[in-house]
Length: 511
Image (cartoon, rainbow, N blue to C red):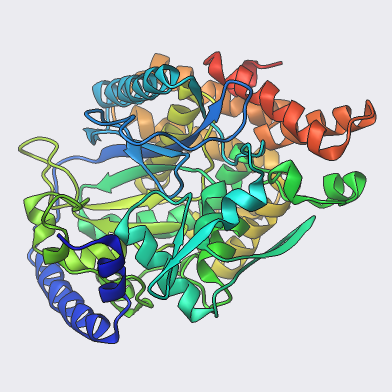
């Protein structure tokens, strides 16, 4: 069996790239035929979710997870040794499907908690770790080993695919990844910087491919107002700030730092970057064509991973393995995905879905499911009503998204109302947002009781004008006012956050 060093060396070789691209184009031709012949249509919309989190010690410090902790469990590993990912089994959108999604998320997280407790650790449902590991944040993120001219980050999960991705991006930028956000300007020798951030990603599989562009383009116009309710990462680890002025940092920090952290760690100065706000699409075939045209990083061949390192793992995906692998590095804040899991005889793995990717991890299962239902219900409701929100200009939607990244609920957000009028009145925007989300869920036969259970805590964020990022900023401000240095203030805030999150109450009930 080849070693990770061998696989990474083969991945970054020029002859690999040429052969890989040829296979991707052949895979794309197969997928276009699938689209044209209607084989990606299904009977029902289905929903799913990816949720990331991380491990901490009993006193809240970031920590790597011992190897083997999650063997024989549905819990997956992610980029950093501290990262965890859980995925739900897709379900038909409806009362039973929503119930199953919530139960599976809770069950997987309980499994993760139990395994971590056996190691004296705990889980953090959070969007960015801020309490440094024992050796310090710089040392943790910068620890690398060189082997045969390749870089191996010591705290990256030991996957040849991650190592290849790291080396390919580093080669393009001369070996350094720059981070420039309020309070921190620093270069890193690895993309492990990206492991600061954790996210949740609702999935909505459309039943008819013909409707996909309407769902996709509407989703872009919802990113700003939905993200504004979810913001949860206003701080980096405290020891990264050095001698930054606390008052200035509190005034200037972004409400959603995980967006620039992800973009800067992966884009590494490339323009346009691989991580970005995507353009509208005109037809479902654009989903295929854009992956083909995207800059290739870390190419792999199917035969390299047949011994068990294959994460794609079903027979249908094997028909377009290299395309699927390249799609795994096609990072946009919304993206279309071809192929999934078998749901039932009427809804199989031949499918087309939306991945809604800008949301940070939330602090409770009800919050996570609440945002999942807000997204899928909203998109269903807007498309079913032929709502004119997609008449909002793309440039405006993009600018609003990045304004929310910086300013959260204080950002100016634009919308086109049901009557076709442009507005920046947030009461009007959120009135429609929740009304159409509820409509979309009701039309999918989700009960009013279930809708209220999950959407009410999210709607309260708007009525109370509060979000996790605002809560964190105010906590740190109070700690600094009480005389604590910035690093101690962030640590104190974070420990309070993890304690609240461990109780399982939705954020709106924290008080």
